[in-house]
Amino acid sequence: MPSWNTMITGFIQNGDLKRAKELFIQMPQKNVISWTTMITGYVQDGQNEKALMIFSKMLVDNGVKPNQGTFVNVPSACSNRAGFSEGQ
Image 1 (cartoon, rainbow, N blue to C red):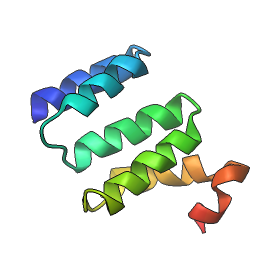
Image 2 (image 1 turned 180 degrees about the horizontal axis):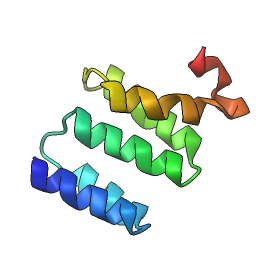
Image 3 (image 1 turned 90 degrees about the vertical axis):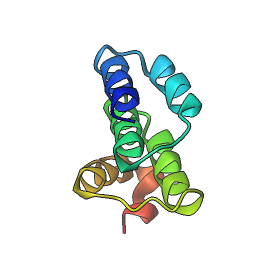
Image 4 (image 1 turned 90 degrees about the horizontal axis):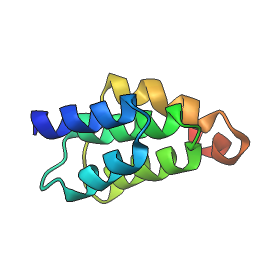
């Protein structure tokens, strides 16, 4: 899993969120690092609603528990008006 996460991080750092998402979808198993990396990518790209959707999917569909890194990025996604209720 670390190499998958490293490649996803690399795509995001190079501004290629599309390829990061494609790789993320292909991952056979995702851990909290995988999910948090995608959330971070969407927040950095200003796609706050997608970041919140990924966060919700992480919790509800996959039962992955967030870590400190996750909680650093989720408030940023919630700071826009659309995500305000989720941030409360």
